[in-house]
Length: 151
Ligand SMILES: C[S@@+](CC[C@H](N)C(=O)[O-])C[C@H]1O[C@@H](n2cnc3c(N)ncnc32)[C@H](O)[C@@H]1O
Image 1 (cartoon, protein in one colour):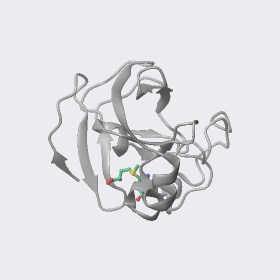
Image 2 (cartoon, protein in one colour):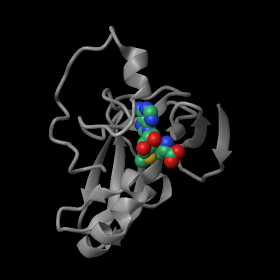
Image 3 (cartoon, protein in one colour):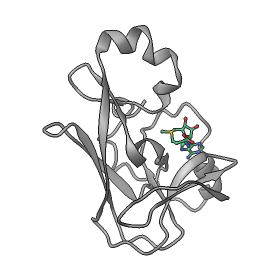
């Protein structure tokens, strides 16, 4: 694993690359629970533009349904949170300010990867699910976030 892209962030978050998941966001120091660690402004695509073009491209792995027909690409670190079915980061779409806010769900230790929950229908093999097999309790407390939230 190596640091791939320098980034300025109040909480010392780093972008690191792994063979299994590509880039991801990692903590370099401990972070308290319920801390807002990133606010990403979003780039919007209209419904028509997305249907005709965006969804046929790599953008489809990064965009969020905004709820009014538009699709939103988070700028900043927001597009680089990988998926976990035991996420330590939650996100909130801020419709009033056209951004997505990311907050820790629990205390984070230095060197942990920070992950969100993409939904139950993934389009890739979840590397972490394989790693955690056999030691994970089934929980559906995140069922409110589904494939409509992250594409
Ligand atoms: C929103 S992007 C996250 C950033 C991405 N890793 C990158 O380098 O640009 C989503 C993509 O990351 C990868 N990914 C995310 N979570 C993963 C996981 N748990 N296991 C394997 N690949 C994952 C998949 O390739 C997926 O299409």
